[in-house]
Image 1: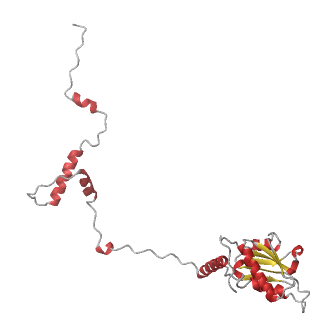
Image 2: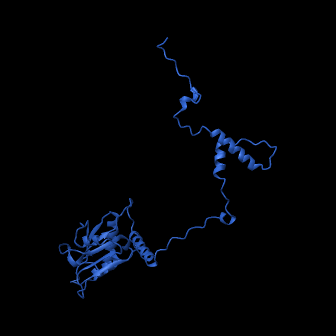
Image 3: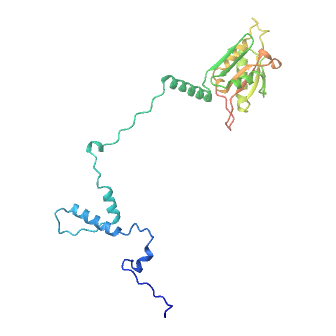
Length: 250
């Protein structure tokens, strides 16, 4: 029929029909098998130079890649196979800094155990003392009477020996009852023989020595309305024990 067109014949330069669907796709591993086969043959010839009748086992792709990557690696000399030397020791802090830290640590230990020394402040009428390391803010509050005292002991009319026994028993009993602040009235010594406050000075000694020293954190002359220079606020340590404290034999 004159109106019917014939299909053009395939050109001999046109690729086969079955490969037309692969055009435009990236196939990086198309020649991988041939590459691995060449690598295996090369490694076999290196392992058995001059030819050998032994059958060479096929090398897997992972082994081939590893051998190829390690082909130019040179073993270390024996000298460098020893242990890696340890690094330089850390710099030692200056001696004065270490000494200062040790002193601070010692003060803290003494503060907890009750073995620390007392810092005392004297004036004509006023006396106070606190264990070394106690916060100045706590001592300031004690001086100002900010701590409400939970008990009072009056030493008027007692001699030195009687007063020492009373103070010792009273403070041990107060600590056992978990009191934190007590008031001890020593008097000004106006009725003593030499008009000297004997009990007042002795009280300072008793509070800063055994057996009362481990119980006391600080003490300070009381405010005028609580006895003034003839009385002391005594701040005791916190008693965390559950069982009552037993006074040791004296």
